Image 1 (cartoon, rainbow, N blue to C red):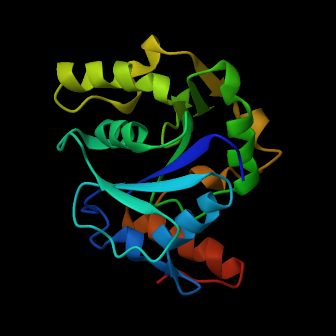
Image 2 (tube, rainbow, N blue to C red):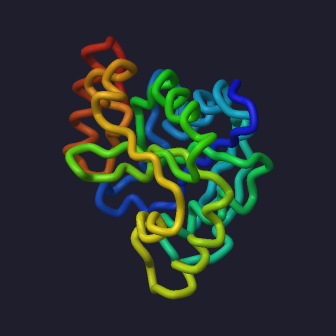
Amino acid sequence: MTGNVSAIILAGGQSRRLGIDKTALRIDGKTLLERTADLLAGICCEVVIVTSTTQPNVQMPARVVSDLIPGKGVLGGIYTGLATIMFPYAVVVGADMPFLNRALLEYLVSLVPQYDAVVPVISGQAEPLHAVYSRVCLEPIKRQLEAQGVPRVVSFFGDVRVRNVAKNEMTPYDPELLSLFNINMPDDLERARTILRARGQDIQ
């Protein structure tokens, strides 16, 4: 367990593009949400699930909170999570990421003392839903939420100390960077199924 760090799982999406509740997909008998919560519980001091829709039936080491500012998208979910955690930092991930890697997440956490946000960057593209944030980010995020309709997740980065994590820093822990893979579309689900079947597993 990593001291002074919470975990936030963003589970507020509508899954419209996939057509099913992706958090309820099962791998080896556990839902994707349960697997994510179990993994993070082994790294962090607490796990918080942020939802904007129905409350999931939580059979896992986590507490569930609803969006404090509804209708503000992913950044609103991050704000809610940071506002409700008990510790100064939080690992933030989506609920639709079947290949999270504990060693990589622990590496990201190890970088936080000097920064307010630790964010992977691949080919110039930030991955803000596989990142670590400080509660220092709350006020900059709140300003963006108040100033815009549904702001981009990275809209507050200019107001905080951001540590970009390059690909070559991450591949020693996760050579294929599958940690960053998420299930948004039917093709993503098929790719996840192919990867899992090669490992003797499946996703239903």
